[in-house]
Image (cartoon, rainbow, N blue to C red):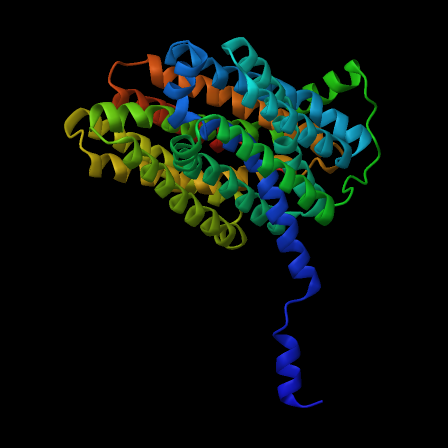
Length: 405
């Protein structure tokens, strides 16, 4: 065999590498469905309100209902997947999500819309929570951290780009076309899941009964290996959702941005999160998870403090953007590494661990959104307070974490 032949062979990607790339791509798609279904509606809320004969404030209940069902549903999906495997709940979740999307597309009043959104969320919570559990089934160590980074990028990309997509769809075809799009997206994702991923849960099934489920969740909640990184990630994710909810008030009402400019701002945040996720995969092998996560928390806290100072002394766009970029950089490091650290020790109950983590994240998101809307009449100040308080609390909590083997 010649040297040229050897060189040619060594440059061909291995089947294992191609398979891993496809697996992560499908997992990222599963993770993105929930946030896609929520944020794609934001530009068309006034149009939806007019069509359903309610106010814009009333139609925002469609987002509140979605998040509530999305959070609570995860607590049931995780244990079910630990008992019966991942494949059945994921495929059932896709079917339920598509049915809910069709219902929403034909809704003629607000109660009908809320029913459809609840059905949608019941399906989306299954795909979202199990994307993390399947990643834990397939990967470990640094590979799990890389997989979580890419999944996190997908979850950030969906709310970043979906407002632009939703606005274009609503303008061209009307707001109902957004539900057609997400239904088609889920159908394609379901086919991809069936083709690329089989059953990945090979651990001993955990009994499915209320007492066993309660014991599992209680055991995770008091286990420092899960508790501290999970709460840390949830606090930072609460800040991210607070940013998404407060940005329209900061940029449109305070800095006179147009809706299109706001959409471009959201899209630009994806690039920062993408870069941070890639950076996280380089930092963890070199410095370890603990030091990398603490560094990310310091960045997030610095960004929050910067926004507070900008709000107090110079509420202009470029200083605000600088503070946001620093926070997003820190968030993009903490989220995948903290998630990997929380799930790694619990392979036999990864579904329940992922479900509890997802529930805490959505609850923290709801609290962050509420605080950013109520803590101050000045949107930028409120956002700075929420980001700073959440990041500093997470930093103090994580610093207290005892090293475990």
